[in-house]
Image (cartoon, rainbow over all chains, first blue to last red; front, side, top):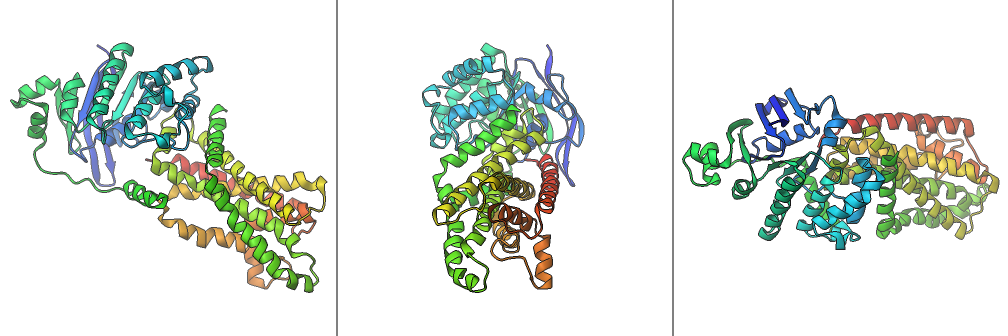
Amino acid sequence: MTHIIEAHGVTKKFKDFTAVNNISFTVNKGEIFAFLGPNGAGKTTTIKMLTTLLRPTEGKIKLDGHDPVHEQSDARRSFGIVFQDPSLDDELTAQENMELHAALYSVPKDIRKTRLEELLHFVDLWDRKNSLVKEFSGGMKRRLEIARSLLHHPKILFLDEPTIGLDPQTRNHLWDYVGKLNKEEGITVFLTTHYMEEADKVAHRVAIIDHGNIVATGTPEELKKQTETKTLEEAFLKLTGNAIRDEGANAMEGMRQARKMWRR
Amino acid sequence: MSTIYILWLRQLKRYSRSKARMIGSLGQPLLFLVALGYGFGPIYEKAGQGNYIDFIAPGVIAMSILFTAVFSGIEIIWDRQFGFLKETLVAPVSRTTIMIGRTLGGATVAMIQGIIIFLITLLIGFRPESLALLPVAFVFMALIAIMFTALGTAIACVLEDMQAFPLIMNFLVMPLFFLSGAMFPLKDLPGPIAVLTRLDPMSYGVDGLRGALIGMMEFGYATDLAVLVIISAILLAIGSWLFSRIQV
């Protein structure tokens, strides 16, 4: 099997804090790979390095054969991403958000229209294509983001905690979409989530990261066997301990609050 | 090219959809025009300087462009906060292209705002001296718009949030405006103020615009153009560099 994502000895340091410490892993083509870990373990930092938003301090990454540091454009074309926080333009309609993405990724005009329509149907938003995104619910925004991330036919789809804050119905739907995409388009999925039962259900393979180190990799079954537990959640807790993690509130969060106050 | 166009179009759509912003940003220039225009008018006239409304109309147009442009540039902070910035940062296009698209979009919005104010000044009786020079006036309006959108963008790149916003208003935008000669003639000023007004790039924008609209100038077109083009280029370069270093 070929590896579509490769990470070798990847380290990220912020001044004297090591967020990710010498991690190595590979993701096979066509696989759904779950990257799990407690808050502050280094998941988002890893995703940012994989998606060209951060440069690794040390180590090598390959995305579909491209180095995200030196072949940025090729690497960027190879993936689509749904970020942890929304990244849509609220003041534009669903369709305008899609068109903007298509232009940024120079999707050819002739396939743009059909692909856009097909994807909006796929996430059940075709009827709402002319609504402003600010009128959408959290679940609708997530669906739109998934549709948008697929517009340029990426080979890899990154999902950073895509189900956070969504109701169980929407979460189920969302994983159905992801499963369908993986099966029908053969797209590789790299996801993070805090809901272990979701990872257990959809992921072919799992890696668990804690304090910047990968502490285990394998199929959900292998991890359960290895830790002699019945569920992935128990296996996760056994591997990462029960202590509660504090994630430093970052500047972005503070700003988000401030903006909310402005808007009221 | 299509990236620049789509980002430009985005700014225009956002602008046209937020009526509150459009109307809100007309308030201040109108207040200056009416309160100062009519308030100081008689004194100005007694001093033998002519019609004060005619004098400040170009200044108020320049001011509305200045304010809108800086705001448009600063919008990057909102985009960063709302997450949309990330969508552009992972896209396979260069940051310089993104920066150009954004700046042109912001500058266009500021231009439109300036033209609206210009139309309002016509309503209250302002008459440009020569129609032939109107294109020159538009060139100066565009330069002011580009220069200050680039400035706003550069500032936004180094700010994490809006906490510093009053600081920018009070210590940058307001001084740029008040020291520019938008409200008073730059002739025969006391030493220190004369120096400050000549250090303010806004002075050259106002001067060029006033020259084109009412034929009254302090520095001349060549100086005005040279200063505006050079400062804009520098600000654009700094802005692009800062923008390329943004991490989210």
